[in-house]
Image 1 (tube, rainbow, N blue to C red):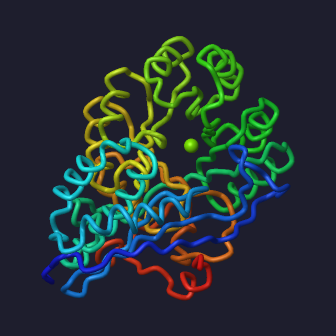
Image 2 (cartoon, rainbow, N blue to C red; image 1 turned 45 degrees about the vertical axis):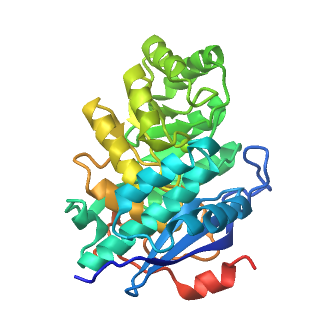
Length: 368
Ligand SMILES: [Mg+2]
């Protein structure tokens, strides 16, 4: 047991790592060119020499998130007790509430929170999942295919995912042609999920959900804009019977409380780099459990947030499936840990997050 000490430094390290995907045609999402994965690493050191790593959600917003960590988070936490994680989470949320309890502020707080939990694990000599009371060594994976908008590319990726041992596959498609092709290729035994990323009004969602229901969806994800229209989601569930998933765009556990009270979802998708870190994820998960809603963590990441998700899921009574973005990264911070074996991810058992990020990869892809 090492003394945790006080927070001596907080650094944001912005990374921009190119990636490729099947049938790459210079895709865009949503309306943005997307061919690099942006990661805002948050490195926290304590005056006792411990180092923790977190990440703040930064897709398409790397520079602003970096600035929030450096100019809002850092000055407010230097010298604070690094073991006071829930206290810091509460005080910073209260202090920053006037900037909105969603978006950049909460993403940056998430990065800090993950780093502090990494430190707590390292200080105790326990893996994060062990610290949180979990003993699972493996977790079932699902392949989360890129936005392909192309039947041939969908068929190719579904074939590849099956060959790599995935037992569950998620599409980011809207069209019946792509979803139907995935169902044909996957066969009847592979559950298929469809994530449409909030394109529809409630009435459009009802029509499209009934069309896609023909392909026996395990869940339909984020069918309605805005994503926080919990009552419209609840109506859609009731009227169509199609299982719904949402939550990656809900920040803090309060959003999950409102969603659960409304009966909005079958599957809850808190995102550890967005929701407020490990502290808020755990609260959200407890709320969902008490409403009989299964957690299916949002984790299309390749930074500390992915490892944090593994540990969190490993500590839940019902871990759900772990999302793996089905793209090919040019560099990986944790080589090997993103590759499932027999359809399952291993949970690292080293102290804290369990694996240190690759220093050479940080150096190569750091944004100057
Ligand atoms: Mg999604």
